[in-house]
Image 1 (cartoon, rainbow, N blue to C red):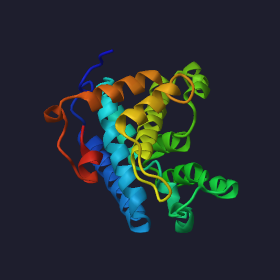
Image 2 (image 1 turned 90 degrees about the horizontal axis):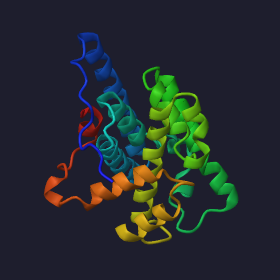
Image 3 (image 1 turned 30 degrees about the horizontal axis):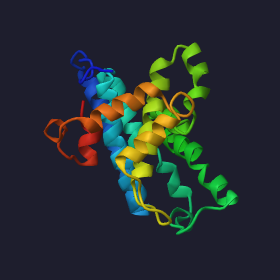
Image 4 (image 1 turned 45 degrees about the horizontal axis):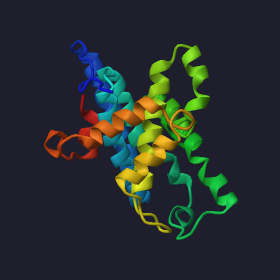
Length: 223
């Protein structure tokens, strides 16, 4: 199934909109730097998820504004882990039930951090629910929030894919084929099938058609 390869173009922003985007970008970069100083592996994972989410959102033909929001939310989806002890983040074994419960708090903590900025409120919602299963998101569509739901779905798929293909203290990363197969096995329940298709098409694209590697500054300010 083919989708648009570029986000829909928007009218040129006004001067006040440009200034607002600049403040939002600065705040995003500040929070990314904070995360990087606290836990480098989480920062690197977040950067990869942000870049991947940006490409998937564009591939699905979402508007430029939506792509920016989703990209920022993806970059910051794990910022709440600054409140999780590094002993848990770096534990070289499976987490206990109690440790998982502590780790799960990072979604609401991250959303609170973004809310406090007064600039990233749309992103905070995506961060709050990025572990919410696709099948549980029907209420968002009923409320006319299809774009918000798609943003959550994109971050969920990209987050899971990068987590599965990355080495962990207690297990090596899976191959691309293994990760995509796992995503497909849970399509329609945990993950959005349409987003999985878009991710596969991006990963299957010739290497010379993929965007050059960019810094997190570029991911924040692109589109």
